[in-house]
Length: 542
Image (cartoon, rainbow, N blue to C red; front, side):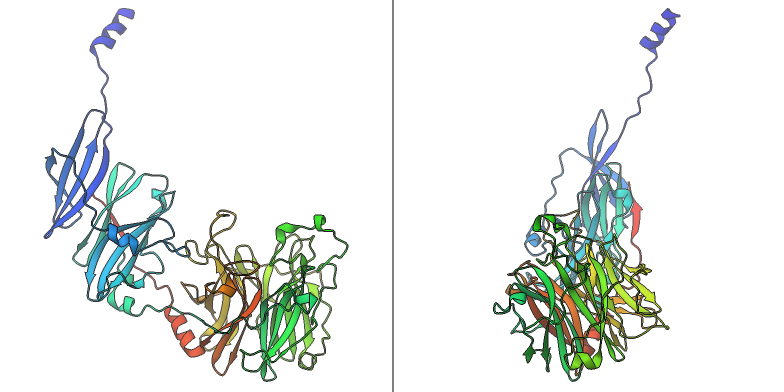
């Protein structure tokens, strides 16, 4: 038996299966012919090959190459023009795929891939008159790679245009080459021409309210203003702090929405309940993890809503110890207008043990129910309730959810800004968002930005339209030079003579305002929707 085994080992060799790896090197288009250059490697040999196709998908081997193929990169110059955008899908390193001539200029196709090899393809249009000027750039990806690419070695090979289709060639996993026909909807000439960027116009004389050293309670910060239009003027309720770092509510009015005509020297609402502030707490006993805007507790980020003859105020109640929760109080409209600050005893309306912020009440019932928005990280939640007379033992449940959008400007977290405003197009919601999850990317620049949504009038859980770009970003000194740089935080909005006024906090230190003509704002917002796109076609060619 031993002799037989030795004979087998010596003369009978096991069959060796060659493992072949593919590496795409380049794509060349000559007339109507497409040439694919690739490298084929096994354990025993390495070959450079050329395959030809007349349609871009069916390739036949035409010859082997004796020399290494050197790809000439003609697109490097565009990297100086097409740069990563921190708040969008293309926030990583940019690779230019190629260019396509159009009647309006040169269309640049590019992609951005992350460390997991999740790739997103974008496009930008350069002006005919100025080849370095971008006149349009897509706000969402033309195409995103599938989950099957994650963890595999991915390499872009080349780009061609075939009978109106733009086709990208990719080497995936060292075993196959795929041709991806990018969806063309967003690249159609009409769609590019109709592209709009919805923005708010900041008041040139911002901020309209600054801290005042003569008042100890508002000497440090004045920010995050609620607003309501009643009695022929705008009433602004803003969060204020002195150097005790306790948040209270200040009050100012404006007839035209811009100019402050009267500002109170005393706060109109102060923390009195144990859930708002515990004065017996020493600094080293405070829960600093949930400190916001430089405050160690109190009444934070108020929103106000007028329903019939009553003003409802929601806010974040924080006592420096327990988790921040949503609180609700109210005041009769007559008392409010006459400045008799006879607020109802506040009550907590969100459950214990959960950080809940950004509360706002809709200004009227919908289908017989009151509607309340609030925010539990990272999304906006919506609740329908029978009554606003909470008893301190029933809580918001978070029945419905509006989610963040990964790889967009509001992909980190979102929250209610101003209470929704009823328009003929739907409920207009001004909201805030951040690009990144601060837990996953603690070191990334993560500004607070402002956007807008339109919600269905009869079912506000349905988002009809939503801005793909921020409508306001922290670009001014008063939005970056304060307690916290890079913050624009809306808490109030009103309409005066068909003009939308949005009141927001800048850098957690100032009260600011921005405006837009309402009809134009709604028109652009309804144009900024995401249509149903045709799917990309992916064809394995090798």
